[in-house]
Image 1 (cartoon, rainbow, N blue to C red):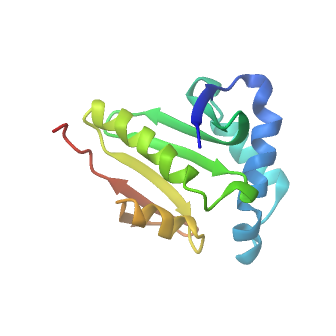
Image 2 (tube, helix red, strand yellow):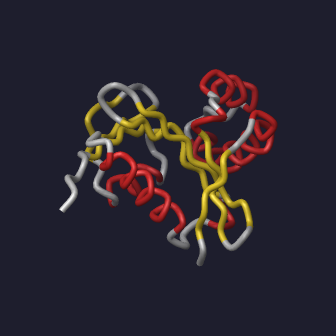
Image 3 (cartoon, rainbow, N blue to C red):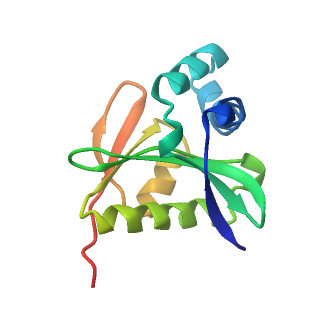
Amino acid sequence: MDITFLPATAEDFESLLALRIAAMRESLERIGRFDPERARARFAAGFVAAATRHVVVDGLRVGFVVSKREAAHVLLDHLYIDPAQQRRGIGAAVLAQVFAEADALLLPVRVGALRGSEANRFYQRHGFVLVEQAEFDNYYLRAFKAPT
C-alpha cells in the first residue's frame, strides 16, 4: 500500500466536507447531534487549505488530514478516512507522519474526538492520553518523542 499526501486547495472544500460528514455521521447520529448545516458551518469556520492534505492510497484519494502548528503543540484538527477504506492501517500511517513532523518540531500533538466515537480508542491505541473532557468532546495529547 502506497500512501502519499497531496496539498488541498480552497476548491476542495465541498469534497472534504462530504468526506467529513460521511466519516462522522454514524457517531453524531448515535448521540443525536447529526446536523449537516452545523457540520458545514463548523468545518468552514476552521478550514485552512494550506494546512490540509489529501490522503492518497495507491493513487486514490481516501481521506484528509489537517494539522496546524500552534505555540505549544501541533493541533491534529482533522483526520478522516473514507469509511469504506478504514481498518486498513491508513489512519495509523497518517498519524505516523503527523508524529514525525511534530517530533521534528519538538512539540506534542493535541487532538479532539467526539465522546462516544470509535476515534477515542484509535487515538488512545496510538499513544494519546486524555487531558480534558468537554460536553461533547474528549481532548488528548501525545508527547513528542525526542529523536534517537
